[in-house]
Length: 614
Image (tube, rainbow, N blue to C red; front, side, top):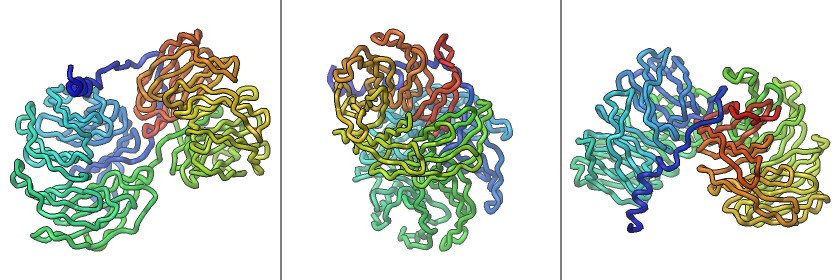
């Protein structure tokens, strides 16, 4: 088979290869607050996501928007469109999911079509939905019966769209470095390409009117005449827009937003000449993920900052109406008794009451200095990796009023850290590992460091040895008998990208990113030897050991559980594809707690005999 043909068919089949069914794990509860990444306005209602939670606002009075409903979705919504009573959504792992919102107080999930749609885009036209995925395809789906969406065909695009918009019978797709594509869907079952516009880069799109399409390319706005879709012509290009990423059009006014979070307005005359009108102050905390303008209100989805509403009635003087705050991505988790401490980047540390996993409740928040990525709790002390160079310690005896005790400045971002017996071992990406004495949290002392050749992403410690998952440098074994002068004594390099390691008895279990898990015999730490391995679909990022089971965080593919009773022949015994992307995993009191990135946190119980140690 010719190589190109083989690649084509592999791309077409990719979502169906080795599909994994959830088994051996029961979901007990979720806490779904997260960043706002998409917003959709339909008449007097606005819909936006907060991680894996959907929020519906009544915006009849923009100055006083009314919260109508919040409900959990089965995943993080990337794009959505309401048609009649049906809200069509696209989610990374769940594909097309349809909710009936006829009774806004009782939303119902009515149907779905499982697809892998990473950052997918969606257009609904008549009885058909057009869904793009992360594998350069567009699916054509019959939704005449929303309870049973049916795939009619798929169309290989050759790029992953950043934006899809519909004008009459043509869907226009922003293809990044692949340019702009127009697809005629008058016959949805047989879509055909009618136009390909080649440009350095095509970002966001908006229709200026029925015959003019505007798109971003770097700091330049291009205007494309689409009166004849089969013969589109560049009308003009306007430079000097700066770092903008999103554009929208409403009432003859052009709106732009970008990496600095502000809103800029422009007027357009009959010849499409553009004149700057006004702008809001720069708000650099988070960039804008999506911009929508309707009825003189601009809506900005701004990640962990939440949803911002801006009054643009006077386009020369846009005025902030309100912001609905949100949380950041859940990157790390630590458990003490019935309390979870969740690292949520710019949103700081969220402290949650998890006594009832089905009804998790917020307790308080420790604000971030920069971005909190990792937390470890030991008794009444909480250790926090906050930003590029800070390791901080808090007294959490009083959960309502945590108190900072001390900190340590470090040279690089913290990928992982371990607290054990008065010592902290801190993985500093490209700067190796740092060893610190934390017996007195108010006077943390840096003792030593070891600079590896790659990037330390995870670590574990046993006896007087420290085991480092050093990216493409493999597994490194350090002798830390003298913490001020750690020395490498062992090395295992038959790996692809070592991301994390956990040690038990005389074995090290290594998460090797796209290459699954390695079991390494470390009976002689100076000569680590592979004893077994197991390939797992997904990106192995974090790894834990409990009893004779190993739990692996697989990023966007969820969790895998392996029985390593016989370390030389590990067996996959449990799996769960979470709604987000698993960043961290902890085990406490017979339960598994997961930091699920934009899916919040999730709590699981293993349904496998002998799986957990209490």
